[in-house]
Amino acid sequence: MSTPPLLRAEGLCLSYGALAALDQVGLALWPGEVLAVVGESGSGKTSLLDVLSGRRTPDAGTVLYQDESGATREVHAMAAPLLRRLHRSDWGFVHQDPRESLRMEISAGGNIGERLMESGRRHYGAIRATAAHWLAEVEIDPARIDEPPRRFSGGMRQRLQIARALVTHPRLLFMDEPTGGLDVSVQARILDLLRRLVARHRIAAVLVTHDLGVARLLAQRIAVMRAGRVVETGLTDQVLDDPLHPYSQLLVSAVLRV
Image (tube, rainbow, N blue to C red; front, side, top):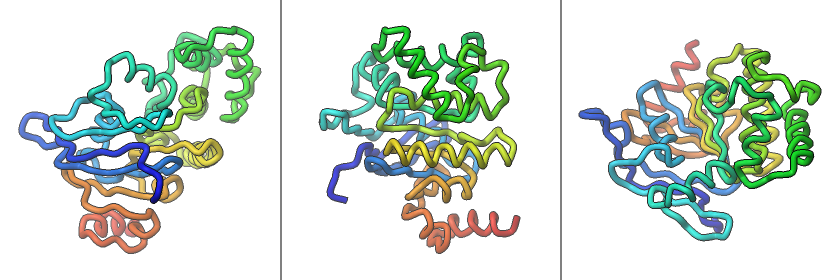
C-alpha cells in the first residue's frame, strides 16, 4: 500500500513470569482497514490488544501510531495526558462486557455525552442532540436517552457501548470479542451494525476474536496467533479458505467439524 500504516507494531515481547504472552510480534494496520487477530484461548490475543492500545507496556518492542497531523508517535513513549486524550477522542474501545466502559448508574445519554465532554465539548443542548443521534445510529430508540443501562438488555448495552466509542469519530477502534457474551440472534445484528458503522465512517479497527465467522464478516485481513506468536497473516478469505500454517489449518478444520 502507498499510504503509511496507521498503527505498526515491531518486535513486541511480553512475559508473565515464565509465560511468554507475546514473542516478537509484529503487524501493521492501514487507515480504514479491519484486522482480525484470531487464535485459541491463551494464544496472546488480548495481551496484544492491551499493548497496542497502550493499556499495558511491553517488555520489548515498539507500537507506532500516525496521528491526525501525520506525525508518527511511539505509543509507549507518549506522555500520559496525550495517551489519555487519544483514548478519549481518536481511539475507541469495545469490550466483550459493556460494563467495562459504561457507567451503569447514569443515563444512556449521559454515557455518550460523558465521552463528548472528555474530548472538550461543553454545550449541553448540542451534546444531548448528538447523544440522541448516536442512539438512533445504533438502533436504540432516542426516547430512552434518560434511561440507565441497567434497564437495557445485553444487546442494547453493547449497542450503547458502540455509540459511546464512536461518538467522537475515532480513527482507530479496538474490539475485544465484541459479541462474545451475546445470544446468536443478537450477535448477528450487532455484527451487522458494526460492519455498517465501521465501513460508513472509515474506521480502522483491530478485532480480537476466537470466532472465525466473526473475523470473516468484519475483517479484510487476519493474523493467526499461537503461543504468543503470529504464525500467519493475509487476506481473511485467503487465510480461512486456504490456510498455509498447520495451526491455521487446525483452527479452520475445527470449525468445519462443528
